[in-house]
Length: 230
Image 1 (spheres, one colour):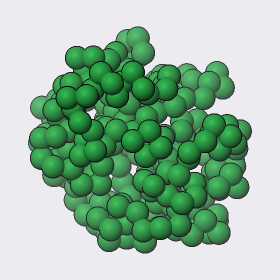
Image 2: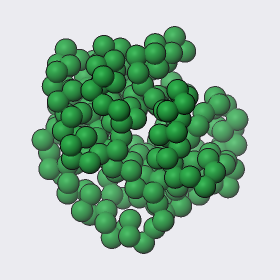
Image 3: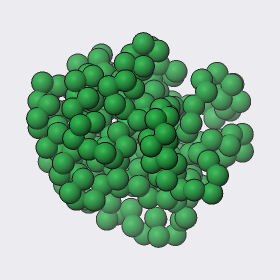
Image 4: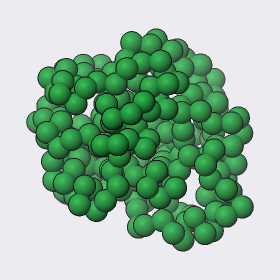
């Protein structure tokens, strides 16, 4: 990715109309001893997201170190909690779960993360994380004890996006949840695109090339795929 920050690269790609792909790897579901096989089977992508709703302490750092030894792809932490932070990655999505009203995931985890982040050179990217109903109870819903927003509530989703922008977030992440029965629909993505010029990430339930291209066309800048490869 050169010397530019990851966020600068995201902005440049958006300006150039370049669509990006991230593969999400959950440390609790990856056999580190098979990291060569896993990397060889992954499709061509722009970065790797590392994280899960609940991960055993230490596993994230072990996976990041193993990936660093084998891959030049940027490694971006997508943490479910402060215990998943490791300075061996390149960047961290500093996620605020703005679709819910649990203060633990709006601000408390962020405060707990400060001592760890201060001792790293991680690029910290403030990200509005919006959980949208994907047709089943996701791990995010269970762990955060918050409810996803119905896909029919497009106006509310756009209001959250506005609030995120007003409060200084740099990314919008629309998430249907790991293993979702259906992905965030194209209408939501299209309206989100009209609402903000911030880069938009969409993940959860995207299983086919046709779905991926349809979401790109609706306005997503980055698509995250994970469960389909696991």
